[in-house]
Amino acid sequence: METTKRIPATGDAGRLVLRVVLAVLLLFHGVSKVIGGVGFVTGMLAKVGLPAGLGYLVYIGEVVAPALILVGLFTRAAALIVVVNMIVALLLVHTGQFFSLSDTGGWALELQGMYLGSAVALALLGAGRYSIGGAGGRWN
Picture 1 (cartoon, one colour):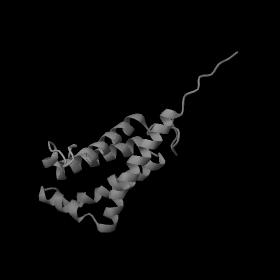
Picture 2: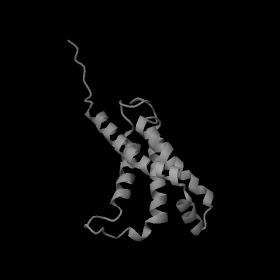
Picture 3: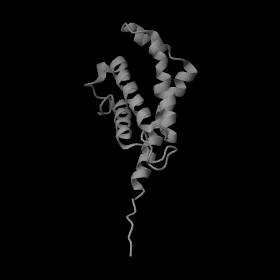
Picture 4: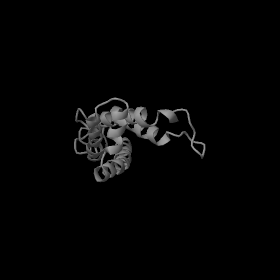
């Protein structure tokens, strides 16, 4: 009698939850920039001596990459784009808060830290079976 090992789907369900939460929350930021523009970002880049046009890359980091993560297509690559996006955001906007606490006692950058950590986790874990790319896709 042959026995087959069944891989529990809970790991894939966890990846799905992680993907959906990260993607949806980032998309709020992206849609806000689609509606209101990226003037704030381009201004910050120009202020530190970088080409302001680089600010338009935020659309890739906050719209395209989260959309790919949401559906589970090129998830690892999209997650790495989010990692870079978050590092740039931390360095451009939040350096003064690295060692600060919020009014309620939490780390002032806990949201940004959670986005960054979740994106790193997805880059390492991949999308899982509940994705367009499937569990076996190299970049999923």
